[in-house]
Length: 375
Image 1 (cartoon, helix red, strand yellow):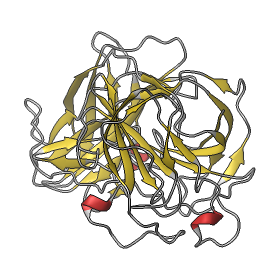
Image 2 (cartoon, one colour):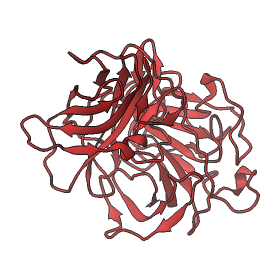
Image 3 (tube, one colour):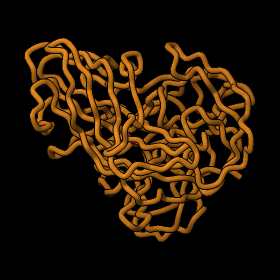
Image 4 (cartoon, one colour):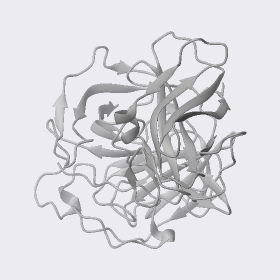
């Protein structure tokens, strides 16, 4: 299996406009959006967020160490050393990871702070950055509250076995690369986005000719509403791509292919993307019920092979559903079959890993590489 799944939006992070931390002469820092605790399939609580950094000095700056701290706590909540930072500090223009920031350049530090089962979740976080290059010094900043709103609890958008999760929160970062800027505001609409791909008992997502969409196990699987809610927007009629390779770079308006945007209520909006041409069964204004069929999984838009892209945001972001911040969610039920490792290798080296204990899960977010059954 050699998946090159694409997110529904391209990276676009400004190199200026990041508010300065008081007193900082080397780095300007801020948290893009306050994190909220999310229970993951590893039975740990995850705080997932981005720290935006800008080098305001005249020399390259090397980020040597990052500490995530809680006020009035002696030790750090999490520590990232140089090798870890090399995999987490995203250069927005090169679309590569490096712990070095050139003068005037911006980057996004993609963090996933995890806590053991039963551990207390901090109410507020701050950050300490040890840097070298322009000067050896420490910068403190990027303070943020931790949200207390519980994640949405949704039904699965598919029904079947053997779905591999390409999502949050560890590398490979399929979607966390897709920071978008609209009207001067930067959004991480796809922080918790998932691409679902169906596999056999090994690591293959298809059988037969690689360039035929019909060869892929997920092609034609029914897509279902994850909750009650009203359809805000749909698009149908986008033809399928040739499977096994990325299409020519589409216009922004074509990134999501055939899609449905659903208002879930409470300021949450679901996007179901890359569906089959002619398969959509709903129209704007339709009132959906949880589990209702809305279309079929396909390979339209910015997609390299048949899959379902799903995410939830705090703004409808019409017409594409990406101009908003990501809303965390969990699924009310799934069976944790096992995991596929090696997806963060270059090139990919996928391998099945043993099944975890207690496969039946409820109210958790499946993590990148998980293989899950929805029944």
